[in-house]
Image 1 (cartoon, rainbow, N blue to C red):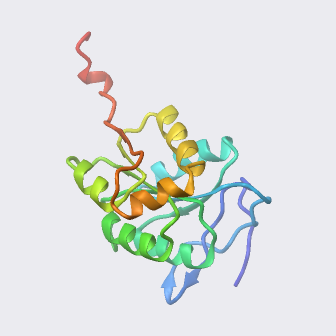
Image 2 (image 1 turned 135 degrees about the horizontal axis):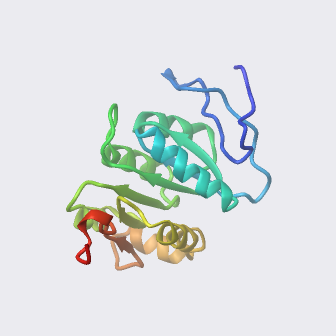
Amino acid sequence: MTKFRSPNPNLAQAPSSVGGVKLQAAAGPAPPPLRRRILIVDDDPGVRSSLGAVLCEEGYFVLPARDGQEAVALAEVSEIDLVLLDLNMPVRDGWDTFEQLSREHPLVPVIIATAKPNQLFTALGAGVGALLEKPIEIPVLLATIARLLTEPREEQLKRLAGKPADFSFARAYPSETGRADR
C-alpha cells in the first residue's frame, strides 16, 4: 500500500482499501502517543474538512470517512477514541453505521451530528453519547467531545445497558436570517 503524508500531521488519510472496500486515500502518519483519535463520518467534504481543521487545531488526531462503509472499514484497522457521525449518508446511513460500530467497539463514544429532525428519542434509546443538530456550535461540540472522552467507564456501561446516563443534546442554533431581531 502506498503511503503519503497529509499536509496536516493531525489529519489522517484513509487507507485505499480495507476488506474489499475501496477508500479514497492511503494511510497517513501515525498520531503521536496519547493524542485522542476522532473518526469524523460525513458525506459532505466541507463538513469533514472544517470540523477536521477545528479538531486538529484542538490537538486531536482526525480520521475522515465519507460514508458509513468507509467508517466501519477504518475502525477495523485504526484505534478510535470517539466517533462524530452524520446520519444522512449514501452507501450506508448513520444508524446502520452506529449499530455496527457500537457492536464491534461498544466503549467508543458516538456523537450523532445531524440536520435530520426528531432523532432525540432514537438517540437516547440507542445509547448514543450525544446528539448535536446541525449547524453545530463549535464550543458545544468541543465541550461534548471533552466530556465523552473523560467519561467514567461506569457511565458508559450504564448507557450501553439502557440505564439513565449523562447525555448531551443541542438543537441547531438559529440561522442569521431566522433571528427575531432582524
